[in-house]
Amino acid sequence: MRYHSTRGDAPALGFDDVLLTGLAPDGGLYLPEAWPTLDRQTLTGFRGQPYAQVAAAVMRPFMAGSTAEAEIDRLCRQAYGRFARAGTCPLVQVDESSWLLELFHGPTLAFKDVAMQILGDLFDHVLAARGARITIVGATSGDTGSAAIEACRDRDNVDVVILHPKGRTSEVQRRQMTTVAAANVHNVAVEGTFDDCQALVKAMFADPPFRADVGLAAVNSINFARILAQTVYYVTSAVALGAPDRPVNFAVPTGNFGNVFAGHAARRMGLPVEMLTVASNANDILTRFFETGRMKTQGVVATHSPSMDIQVSSNFERLLFELMDGDGHATAQAMRQFKQTGAFALSQGQLARARAGFDGFRLDDAGTLDEVARQYAATGMLIDPHSAIGLAAARQRRADPQSPTVALATAHPAKFPDAVQRATGQRPPLPDRLADLYDRPERYTTLPNELAAVQTFVRGVSRRAGADAPASRVGS
Ligand SMILES: *Cc1c(COP(=O)(O)O)cnc(C)c1O
Image 1 (cartoon, protein in one colour):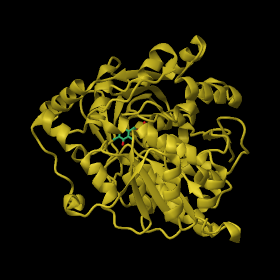
Image 2 (cartoon, protein in one colour):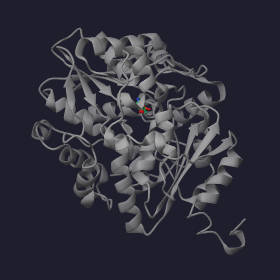
Image 3 (cartoon, protein in one colour):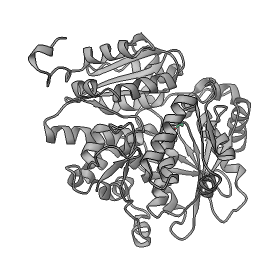
Image 4 (tube, protein in one colour):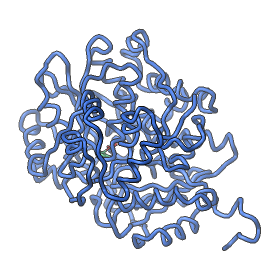
């Protein structure tokens, strides 16, 4: 199994290298050269199987020829054994044809754990096999950071630096990152937005000497292994609801387009996914794109669903590459134009193809609180604001009761208690394993939104930095 870059100018790699590399050296994102397929018999055979077993079966073909291939069963059992529900990602019916897929039973209470837990084990395995060491640098709007920290804390061959936008994450989110007392974990509060943090990470990846020096690796959803791990719950939920014999729709609260692209990947593998609804908050660049074919940034506004307060959805490039018929140079040109002018447009034909499988949805803060309140009144369930946007999108497209719609519940309500309390009057308690979060001491470094300052910090904490450098450069 080989992977190529969406920008057409980087060598193809195998799975282990894609896992460790993240962003391709030409600035593109890796995609498999061909999608493995899940035939009817395989899908039917998944019904009733443990989550870890389906996960290993779905992921194994993507690892063909890699050191991870032989170990994936054990690694999946280990990773998904850390979830607080035996089913890992349980489905809950909320009305006649809408379901919530609870993806938040991992260690940090958001869906990011589903991919990050297996990523941590994969890193460990591949690095030990190679005798190598990496420095993970990630940007977070809140949930990726804590999930990456939990997955990689105390690992011998990994240092972790997480950039978060100062003052723009919820207190629970921040504390889940800054209270982890592990020597290999480093938090940076950047004086900027999430998009600034993400741009800093991209700029570090675009600096080859820096990249090589610290052994830079990514845990953002630019890392294909994360997308891969996220395809699994589309498969488990769809087969539970009757796939492959009937199609299923998904409504996906979306920021970076990673989670919803994983649904598209599952569709490419043969899962009968009819419509993927891209559900946004007031930061509705993707909704506007699916309406007009034009991707155009506006300023980021803060909302009750901060993990979706994003204007530059990195993973959209993977879909763009497909809409460009796999033409890496055309994709690179559109991305360059987007970077320079803040906009690019697709042809009507390309837009029609995109709309055959995706539709857009937006919900502002008032609508989000209404949905949280409505769900509480109807069922007694507390849902978080991100999940509420997904559920509102699912209810909107209930027109065809023959094909069920699964709304992805991406965070535990206790992760966003203020919004939930405002909507319902109820304050969702943290699960026992996190009950002392507000008593633990915090540790982080504030840095300006400047590449040089952040690179100096990363070099300073990386145990890998300087290890391969000629003697004259050590300590420089
Ligand atoms: C990250 C996140 C999202 C957005 O997911 P993407 O893969 O970035 O589209 C939605 N909800 C929550 C709670 C998240 O943490």
